[in-house]
Image 1 (tube, rainbow, N blue to C red):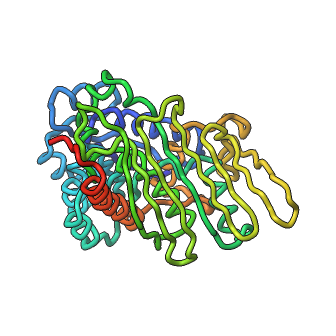
Image 2: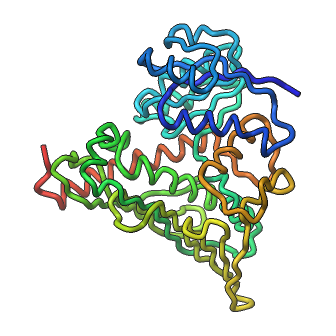
Image 3: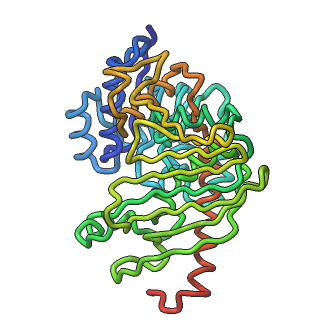
Length: 365
């Protein structure tokens, strides 16, 4: 069994989730390699020291020492959005690193997109943190869609909604999430997962035609969208649709809802019924609910294929794939996928600028 020596660039909340997933791999997959938590790095020394102690990392290091650490062969980039691109460039230049897990967004500007696309990654595997793609029912729904049974898409709708930012106390704790798009805002934070889903189903020929935003709070910058909606055209199939992302939709919990209407039927998925997906066939005139649960067979169905899937379970599977696990049904988001999502997030910000200039005359300064 192989060994991987892992380093974390970042020691915040998402880093805890990644540590959990890596520690859980051996319970789900018999072919899990031996994992050594070699080093953790973050800006604050106290934070990285505490993280190393709590989660079993051999050492904590500052950035310069971390980048020079020749023991590392696998790095997770988990810091703030604005430093993802710089950290990726530095890690890509580490000669012994074979695998890079890059949390979304991959970058924050057009120039950074160009810089990342130009990096030579020969001999290195890159996976981007769109873990939602590894939810068991989403994985099966993508596989069903790719079978062609529903035919050519005609129109689609995707929603990713939260309601937490309605509370000022919640906004106060997350000021860094309220930076202007494309670095912050609902479309960058939540909508990027929705864009990732649409790209996985429809391909990378999506074009934004327009955008709008809603939600007006005195403590939120006008250029940080709390709700935004984009209209999209798939230039390949000529299908059209909408994608909306919200932090202020009351009563939604954590809702991801996707519908794709095609020539031979319809596919539907909702996170409120995450243990299954649904499809309708014109030839039979019937809806079918396809139960999935947490079934990742033939790889794993621990603890049972009937157990409802959860967010952390999909992250565990994403880590299995990252550490060279084999799953023919999985859609694995690489750097090109991350850059395609970021292109659409960046273009959304430009369309939102136009919307605000034309229709929101009372912008906050």
